[in-house]
Image (cartoon, rainbow, N blue to C red; front, side, top):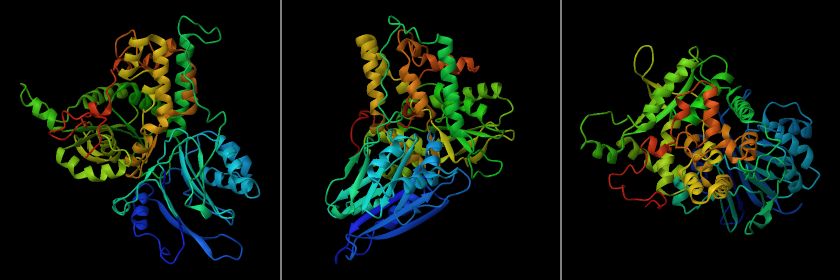
Length: 547
């Protein structure tokens, strides 16, 4: 994980120095990469004998999750690269293209660019290189010879990259800051469907889109086949479950092994954990992939004033933090302990009082931007506090104690609902129009992934110096599930907790998680009670814009 900023501006008598908000913007990005930070300043000329026309300031802050720590930005006579990513598929291609034997994906990528693009069509070669790798990424590349900047996010948008482009200036940043916002800088998400090329000699012009289409980036289509249209080549149901288990196990292993930089005796990996089907399955698969050592399970709960006011009118008493997700997390812990008694499972109960929520609100909203709806805030707040990892261990041998997770990598179950019919809108579509309407709704969810929320989630969690990884969004997992007929994945004629995500429930049962396999899906903002934390927010709709 890294934080990236790039600012390019035309030099003139009125604009020689960097803008005042540049240092605060770079500082905001260092929270994402606390291990190493470095800035590179370039003066680019419009011609061989011309005075410098453009200044570029390229900054990287690095979180080292693989040894050895590699310094950034990468730089040569031809290029400078700030890279924030992980290559899950394509390292062999990069090493061959760059003629290097690298274990660091950023170094291998830079070697491939340096060797392949130095004397060729840079845009075309970048499209080819990035069409042959898969994983979460954002990058900014300065082409020093041709006075251009190339930048992009991966096709799903799993890493944040924001941009502001106005007359005479280009700004790229992983996250914004209050000083830049106060100065009137408006940052928007970089669209994920292309690599973007900005001619630095024409900063007033719009960037050009560069294609990176390949088998690894082409749009995935949801299979429309049903039980009435059997595919003779399809394996039987048991084989489908076994194949999903293997694909998901491999995806988790790629994301949970070889993590560097951990504190001795502490967990290097944490799971964003509700005790639900998705997170519990990831936790057990991580156990199967990782060497001995603790795994942190991060469960967040909010003392929601609206919920507490309603509860005060009812008989009995419960802790304000006994939210639905907290209760299932405790039950899920018992199941994990029974299935993997040799593993040290650390259930980190993260309690958020209303006062603590209010104090963090300005910072959380700043990380969210440009996302600005009521629902954005409900989800972002839950992820922010969960990823912070400050809570207590209630299940330790010495009784409850304060605890701060040291894990550098977080596993998230995002993607399972989109792929496997986990949302209530999927059930409504099926009830309205059967398999055809359900297929259309699932396809919309897959197609919307790049524009919905992954950049927001990355910003609010990475500010704690942690990297979030999504096994369900692994290209192989997605391709396999999109290619399965509906009846192999779900049966929405059954009740919630049975027919939705049916194939994943069967996988959980194979793993021994009989209780978890029957859990009903809850959105994080309701399971953790982070939705509408204001006392007067009850009538506000999730899609409404924040004040």
